[in-house]
Length: 200
Image 1 (cartoon, helix red, strand yellow):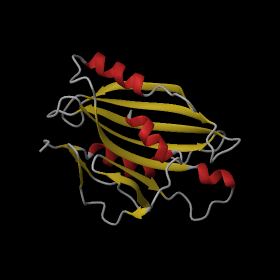
Image 2 (cartoon, rainbow, N blue to C red):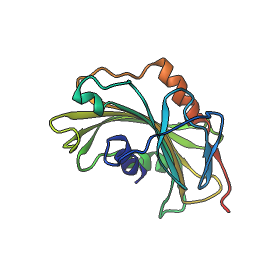
Image 3 (cartoon, rainbow, N blue to C red):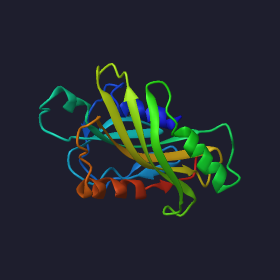
C-alpha cells in the first residue's frame, strides 16, 4: 500500500535525488490530482513519477552526529488504484485506513487516530500515527520513531482510486522532535492544497 511505498523514501531505502523546490506557487499535476509543494525554504523533491511525489526538508546544514543522518522530515502525495471500487460508508473507509497504517516487517504501529475530514470538499480520513522501525540497514543499532499526519481520500471522480497525502518526521528514539509551529505552517497548506482532477 501507499504507506509502505512512501516509507521507503522517508526511512532511506531509496537513494534520493534532491531537486530543490524553486517555486512554491507552482501546482504539480499527477494522476487524478494536483498539489502545491510545501510552503517553505529548503524543500527538495526526492522522488517523482506520474502518480506520486516525495519531498524532503533540509533540517541542518551539516549533521553533527551519525544519528543526525536518520533525522528526516518529509511530505508525500500519491494516487493508488484499489481492487475494491468504492467504500459503502465512512466506517468502511476508516477501517481501511486503520489497516493501511498497521506496520509490518521492520515497522510496528505504536498508536494512531483516524477521523472523518471534509476539509477538501469530499469525505476523507485524517490520521495521526506513530510507528517504530527496527533493523534499518542504514541505522544499525538504532530504533527509529516515525510520526505521521495525513489524509486518505477516495477520488470523487474515479471509483477505486485513493489519493494519499501526508507529512512525517523520522528520528532516533530518544532524540528531540524538531516539528514545531513553523514547520506546521509549511506542511498543513500542502495537505490542504489537493485538487482532484478528472482522469483522461
